[in-house]
Image (cartoon, rainbow, N blue to C red; front, top):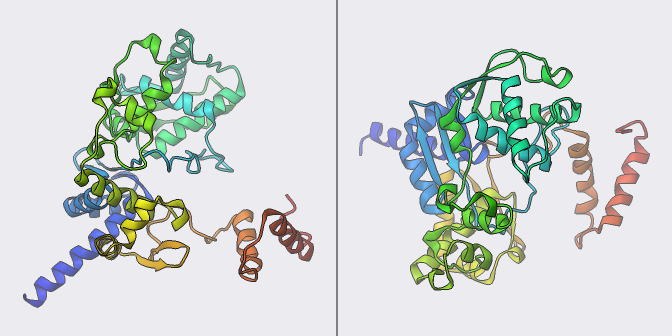
Length: 376
């Protein structure tokens, strides 16, 4: 192989590794928001998609002409613990509450039918949809708290590329429901925001049964048929995907091995740290097997990570800090991150660990030494 060919191979490997980490950080990348990342992923979409499919069972949808690339990260359900909520993009970045999630779903449904809308027209359509649905609470734009929740939803959709502000600013609606804001809607991208193994259209049920069967229907959306009744899959999710007990899928050895590979690597590449005690016996056995270790090390190398393995578990380190959406402590560290950094000394000095009370005393000692710091 010539020197030029070697250089091209190395360049492709570096691009693929960078593309994998870019999508782990931001599962939705648009040409408008990040043209450099989009261009790299457009060029290397094939090998990047193949890596995610083989190692994690995640689908990468590349739509260069529509200007977006989407990584659909899904899981078996046990890892969806609410620790990674959608966040408000205004000051504080508080987590979305139930009201905001409700408005997000209703707004997305209403936006699908129009390429252009105003903030007032959309608010009216949401109010009408909520008013005609017996399950949804009414949407009252005369209340400032409701307008704030609505704006948080719009700003999230804007940040994801589903909405493009043509004129005005969504934030002005918080102070006045007569604010004028014009949006362009990207319906194709809006549809891609939902990352579910089973599409809602495949779970068609009468409208009057949705509220009663809600948990069952959500479980059906989370079920991944490729694994059958895989180890550790939640029984209610499996049952909800079947029409009757006779239809409950059974797993073959191939399906079980596929599930083990994907479930383990999903956690390793999506969680900050993975402890052995949080893995099932089957998952631990897989990681201890020659095949599991070979696949793990190959996946880590191809993605450009470094593997830190300790007695307690595993940690993947990105030497270029590309893959994380939240750096610690970060250049402009928050008070909480700075306090956490200072508490590391106390944690390192206690090999057996500290309970909540001991951590509280350590934090108080830090505050006593700098009484004017972080008064809030």
